[in-house]
Structure formats: C-alpha cells, structure tokens
Length: 102
Image 1 (spheres, rainbow, N blue to C red):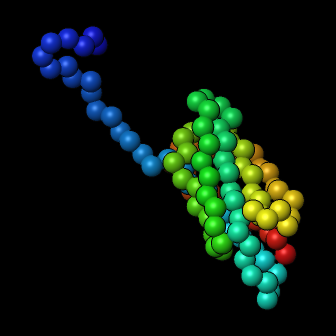
Image 2 (cartoon, one colour; image 1 turned 90 degrees about the vertical axis):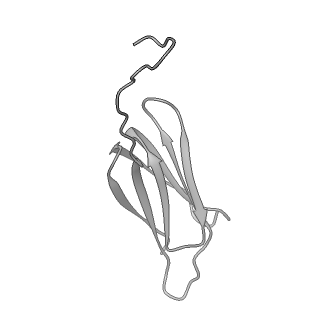
C-alpha cells in the first residue's frame, strides 16, 4: 500500500519478545561465582548482538529473533577458556544452557 493523505491501513502487527537463552553457571562446591559474560551473535538475517553480564547462578539473554546464533560464555577475569555453542532459534522459544566451571 502506498502512503498518501488521509488514513492508510497497514494491517495488524504481532510483536513478540523473541527467544530467550538462560545460561546456568555451575561452580565447584565452596567456590564463589565469578563474573560471567554471555554474548549472542546472529549468524543469519540482520546482524545484531545481545549480551548479559554478572555474578549470578543464571544469566538471561533475551530479545532474539528466529535464525542461527553463536553463543559465547566466558568469565570476565579470564579464569577459564571461553565456551562457544551454535544455536538455531525460532524467535519464541526458551533455551537453557549450562556453563560448567567446575
């Protein structure tokens, strides 16, 4: 439809919050949680990145559309080598990944 003077009906748009990746962080008993970063890059469609960072037993990265993604989990202080994982998301699912630092 062309936009012109007056009203133009563009139809209904359905918005979603997108897919969510929850990263569960495991450490050895008696050890404190390090600061962790989880970064996600799109590998298909528009290029964008989402990330979360903190000292928590779980980090959540949300707002991911449908497509292929690369997830990298790392400690901010570099105490462990980064771990990478490729994922295919449908734009509405919730995925749980474990980052095992034990």
